[in-house]
Image (cartoon, rainbow, N blue to C red):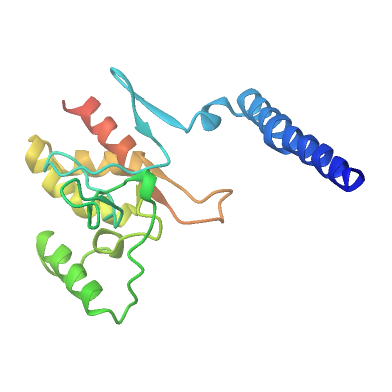
Length: 196
């Protein structure tokens, strides 16, 4: 029996050291050397230090700021652990709503979000939650649709705010991959620098 048990224990210890210790340390060391900012979570710096990550959205509700895509993430209800409550951009609970296009709940949520934005047609990313619930970016159309509200709340000319949106718009990766996008946190930080 010991002849069978000994190799199993040795291999378990060996692979635990290799895959549980050596490999993670090597990958972390390489990442910290080659791409230190990304390895640290792509932090975004503000006046007083780190204010967030370029990879995870934040909930902005003030009229003075651009709002991101709705988030369907939740957290346990502190009053009743068997229930959950809305917790936008909760990275510990990344998920979508999993509601299909024919879902009455989804249709009502989209209608309510569109109504809250002033009714009428709205950019899709302002009325639908993403698959992860953490999207930090919105489309340029979604940002431009909010420019009037933000300009009015800050006492700025709307064309100045629209120019800021265009400056903060990132194009397609390598000119062909993905869609143009605006990072909401970076846009709001640029807006604070423009008109605190």
